[in-house]
Length: 331
Length: 295
Image 1 (cartoon, each protein chain N blue to C red):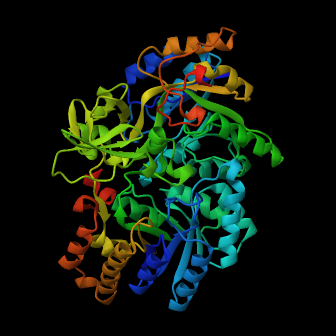
Image 2 (image 1 turned 60 degrees about the vertical axis):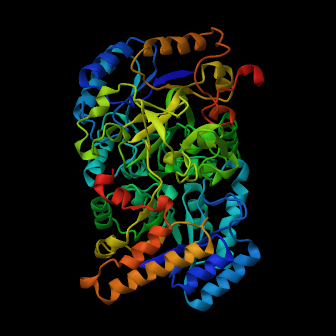
Image 3 (image 1 turned 45 degrees about the horizontal axis):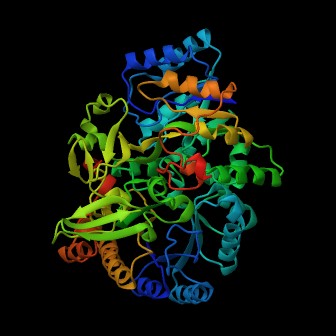
């Protein structure tokens, strides 16, 4: 299985290469990608030097143009596709069928990967994208159980990439408008979820409040660990009970699934986190490289080492990890 | 302008569903969508039951009948059900997943593109038009401006404009998950949900810790806390060339909602303001209510 790692900056890209990523994925510095955060992503010069480093290391570079284009910005998406093709990247990751159609017709040699934002969770949807746009790989949304991933893998000819580690989106990617409902900006259209500009922290006599566009997302007692107010990870009231009604702050970690994923013929595992620091990318890539290599050397005796678990636990939201939807009981 | 009744998004028991449609059949609706779009475990009515209901409705009314497909299609069994639904041979289908688009396109059947398909520009719309899309229900986060831009962009591409159906009333479907939030609220596993969502005919309100109604839990679907209502925007909707207004079923008072929209389309003045949210339509956070006087 290929190890696909995120880079929101040139140092992160270098870190991923250093630790043995098989491919690194990046975005342009605008709203054409789903991590459109201030100061993040690579400008033209950085992209060129990044690609140079990737080539010298004999690895691959993918570019994500994976938000949905609106008519007044169409030319920007078109240009992003053209630029990726000119650079000669190894794959373009896209979700919008308008963008996929343009890329497949204008640049037939540019390999297309269906982004997780494309929400393809079943073989028929994958066949739609394969037959019309000749996608060479698809990233599955983080909503399928392991048994369902197996069913999809058995019934599709599209090579699959699954999420291995990182922030846990609990909604089907590309099918969540929670952020735009509260802040006006959504992953689909703006490449952001629960955007930082809408976040407000306030210290009160009762404790620390986190707000998103004025809406109280969580309230922490003194000494309680506070997390970024991602909408789906707040504490709310349901039937009079206060709890994480949608999901706790936690990260997805699937190290222990490596043997099953490999047995299903999964083509690649993806680390989430272009918004993370180079140090984070370095450490996560390091652990996953070790784990994948250990599995390759001796698949029968593969076991998750406690040092890997400890390293990833320390990098996780709320210091906890979950198998998420892969594990049926989570659902 | 036509009025449509969207698919019932909540889980109602069989009797309630049949009574509801018997009442709706008496109302001035032009299109009625049937079928389950949220959770494959909800089987109060089978595919054959829905088709039988459609035949009954056809006999007692004039509304066009459409069968809506599941949105989040995960298990192989769910995909088989979706395939059978697309193969029904009687009714037009609303596709809410690209899997349904694929089935319908393979069979050469026209379809309605539902609000869960991510179509935000004319290039994408043209793709689905080539696959057989007759009518387009834009994503609920689509603003009036984005809608207008898409139609103008269709013109620029030399494309026929699709018929547009706007989600004009009801709790907005915002998100879909593998997890069942209703079962979670009752401390049950999804596989042992015991159809607990039948106890909540309009979902479970989710409030902020300050008591602000934020979302509505409806099984694996998260909906808006507020009801979206675009009735005051009727003149603008009409001016944009929108052909259909979708009214999404609620457990109570739906007949009054249909009548209120019908009166306006028959010439009554639209209300200046109503309860509920309309932010998306104005390009603002969906939860907001933008008052007419501010425009």
